Image (cartoon, rainbow, N blue to C red; front, side, top):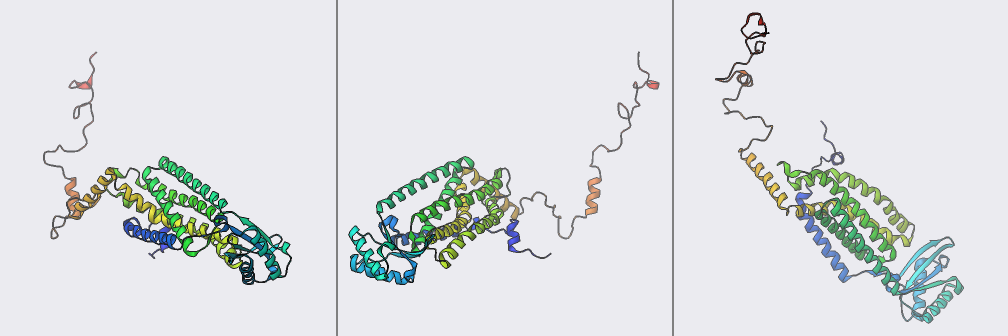
Length: 395
């Protein structure tokens, strides 16, 4: 019979990937990635948009030239009238009225912003009213951040309560740890890439939490199904049953993640990369990275962490010891597995199946012979009234 491929075996849950058994490796990799993310936070930090850091935004028509040319002219205007400030970000944005460039600068005073706008109009050869500008205070960004943090805390609390009621507290702890790891790693990549942190970024972070929770619940539901009543038998440890559940739900999680990542990848690589829609790159990056991390953490972190917590339960720990002790006894030949054929007495004198069948059919010494008993009320006696001929009944 031809061997089936890995995809087919994954789909049927027959790949037998030892994910839980290598949990120390996954924990080590996760710890290293967290360390890199924390170092990125401390050394490079985040590139805050004007919504969080405060600043000014100028929009000029795209007809003035290329984006690089527009950025150079705005930098020249800032050098002359803006106290030496420079353009922080520049991107091309589309609207119903046409394409235009949005250039963001650090915080400028009202007089500086007006002077820079006039200088820009002279440099571009357009009227000042064709350039629109706006100013954003950093207080607005602080308000957005505080509300986002409040929403995150409420979300985690609701998730914890749901998982405790639906499963148990150990599954809730493992799931929340997986969500936290997902956020930290996504934020670390965002910091390393150097994309601006905008309100779209915050929305993306809150969105990936829901996707990550869905992936974890799918896996934990299968784990609960496989481990229900596991202490009633001595065939599988808790970790082995959980690993089987991972193999059985791996293809489903992979399909869900791929289907979700395809449109987000189109948003990021086509919309922001090829078409130049700069407003999409912040949201696209955080969604793409967050969803990919949600799949990895739900498989490689959440379930192995759950097994680690469950093994601390005295009941599960005693069950695991019984399973391992039974396997050791079977390996030493002290216990015969249930359903296994009885071995021959010696290699030179094997048991003859025909003789064994005849021996099983022969009666034991001292046993009553088995056969058809004569019919009657008392075996061997004719029916009727005992020893009376004809069996006449006494009136």
